[in-house]
Image (cartoon, rainbow, N blue to C red; front, side, top):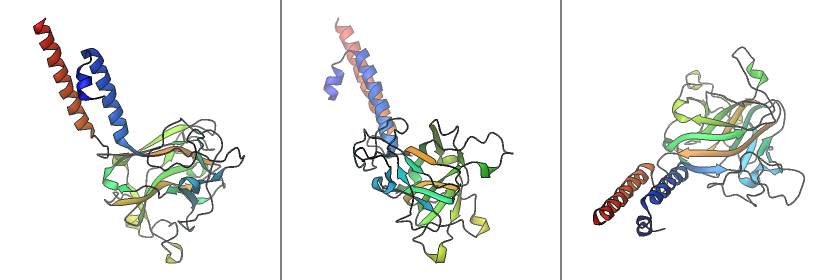
Length: 277
């Protein structure tokens, strides 16, 4: 629809349409990556490796490029959302979810390298979870009894893991949405590699001053996902998304100016018609 055709609409219809267009612009402009984990199994009963969709899962000391674990289920996942910049393989109508099932493993990474961005643009990370462990309802409960999820990002070659843990709210019968607000997070550096091999997934740094409380540095993020200190039962994730600031085709401020400007033009047209009447 052109600007001229918009202006030819009755004012009330124009205003409603313009508001919808603005809302759509805001949504499209903020989510610049979303993985929905479609499966492409053509009726097979077993899950395929997560690498088929550009994701991996493994423990510290495993190879970054080829860790041994992580699959995509043939069962339906969480809410049906559209993929964004995640290069889906197969029909997105056959949506599954990613899962990691080896039990009670320490230092678990679930991650991808299929998209990169500048860390200064990151506002939020959003994902759905459906883990086997329940909710920790008070601080006296032992962390060891629950699967705590942390955000992990590799910036400039260094791994940063959020100090803050995200706890699946519920049990394995329901999906819940987790939101990591970058403005509220601090990080610890993970830079201890087995045999000093930086092609492996690292453990926490031995430098006490860098183990927590760090700000995420500015630089290119070329690996991101979740880190779990120790899992209890199956970890399931779906609709993993990045909300990036100033990354849209039409920034929100610009869209707002366009909307206000067009509203003013349309309003002026209505006023002029009434004057002529």
